[in-house]
Each structure stands twice: as C-alpha cells, then as structure tokens.
Image (tube, rainbow, N blue to C red):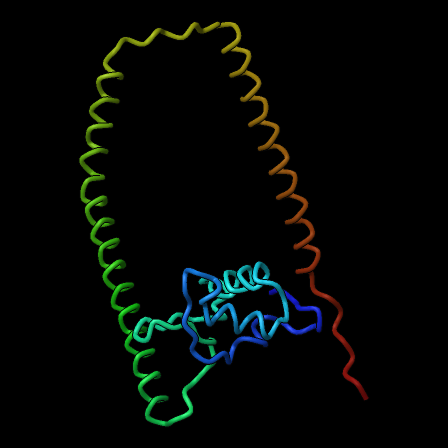
Length: 191
C-alpha cells in the first residue's frame, strides 16, 4: 500500500475511478491523464502509480474486457440497469473462474490417481532389486567367545539383582498392608 503526500492511499483515491481508456501512447491515455490530474504529478510517476494499481495483487484498477476500459475496483454505474449488467458480468466471470478451478482440481485428482496406480508396480520392482542384492553371500561376523560369555554372566547377574529387589519390595509392601489389616480398637461412638 503506497501512501501519498497527504496521507491517503492510492486505493482510497482511485477505487471509485470512472471507466477510462488507456493507450500505448501515454499522451493519449485517459487513465494516465486522470491519475496525473488527481495526484498533481509528472507523467513518470503517474505511469508507476498506474502499474502498481493494476497488478493482480492490489487490483485497485480493474480492466473491463467488454468495454476495454479501466475502472476503479468499487465503481458502479449510476443507472440501475447498468449496475445490474455489471453485477451479472462479474458473477459470470466468477462462475468461469470456479469452473476453471474445478477442472484443474479434477485434472490433478486424475494425475494423483495415475501416480497411485503406478506406485505398487514401482515398489514391486524395488523389492525384486532388493532380493537380487540379498542373494549375494554375506560375510560371517567374527564372534569372540570370551566376550560373549562375559556378557551372558553380566546379564544373568542383572536379572538376579532385579528379582531380589522385586522380592524385597513385595515383602515391604505386604508387611505394610498387614499392619493396616490388624484390628484397630473399637472407636467410641460420639455422645
């Protein structure tokens, strides 16, 4: 959004611009003359302002393809019949855009379906290639028997230590529960 010297924006100044014709020759362009008159600036700045206002991102100025004129984005004709015609044209343009988007979505869905159908075949090829690689003889790992025996003893000791700690925990818990189960003296009813 570009701010002008007086603090307003180009959108606020030109959103209601009436339809004007544009020419390749800047001196014959009604749009550039209108912009120059409202901004009170030179031709170069008017061209830059026009180019920034007509981009799809800003859309301050909209091109009417039927009449081949540029107009402000919020401009409506003064007569009711013309307003209705403008709104109908706008609705028809939006319908065309929606139809185009629907067809492109269907096209992409078709492409995705084709890719999904092709995927299992490629996976099968990959699995076949993996099987061919797996048929090659693998080298036997070198095992140190003394190291393996030491690891077995260490794991057996860890298992025994865990069992002992579990048994101790079980004994302490059962002793605590037994103390709670002993009969407590009868309580005296309140008077």
